[in-house]
Length: 276
Image: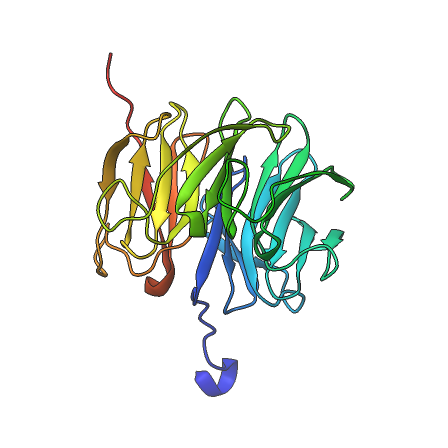
């Protein structure tokens, strides 16, 4: 049979990083080692790819549901690509070495139609309109409020507040839609409630904040004032355990997607609201 039809092609995640979903229920996973974005259609039980042959190190993903565009940051090419999620055509290219230096986290604001990009090694977060025009930039290198030391992942809450993982300041900073500083929480430490290697971030419908910590092999959950509520996971390969996780995304149904990077998988959790 192998002589007749060839070897079966098996596709596996190799180094999943960013993860996001769209309103149609597709799950998009940026795989930096496979140089492609995996697209899992859970309803049809199918798999397809975006960016094959055009991406080098895809890191993070955001989705413009209205226009059907999947934005992908490439940390080696120093660009953000906007792919048509159905045809895989490149609809938009933002940046290059003159604009970005190791771009990572992305998040798209459907209400203001803005794309936010964590420009990691330029220590800033940049906001673009739908045409790729730069609207404004937040921050510079430093330790003060509104300054960054290698910003990584980004998230938005339902009120439009922007959450930035300020990785090597070991904190999360929160901004208004237009870049005004609101608050911060977190500091370096080796126990629960502190950060060691913070990465992915997401916010649920109740305003709880989820932060992956790669060094702790878990994600921690904080309330909107930065108080630790719970941590989930430890090192291992069983369900609910992690091996150097990186990305996190919370969808509209409060499902929490975590890219369990060195276990080569994505794990999905469900936030359950308190019964009143």
